[in-house]
Length: 123
Image (cartoon, rainbow, N blue to C red; front, side, top):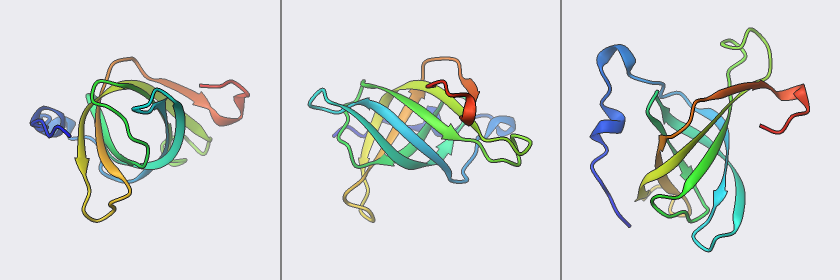
């Protein structure tokens, strides 16, 4: 697996550091065998350029994924809102602590969408 330099993703200007608190997230995409998957995970980092999370599913560098992030009710004025954003895998790292999961970093490629959970629409 490749371990590229992630400085551009993690080192944002001081005014735009990003968030490091855990956010429940669904990741959708294609695994290395080309099968679609949906996996529950928790974001470990997110900023305007990308995010990092752990996956059990094997994905390839360059593959596209969609994140559906549960926004904290405090930020969403008590509503159940989801942040939906697409990106491309830029790095995969082994995680010694949780060897069943890989640390995956993506760079965002689309504008985000915020949608109510109860809207009945699939993000």
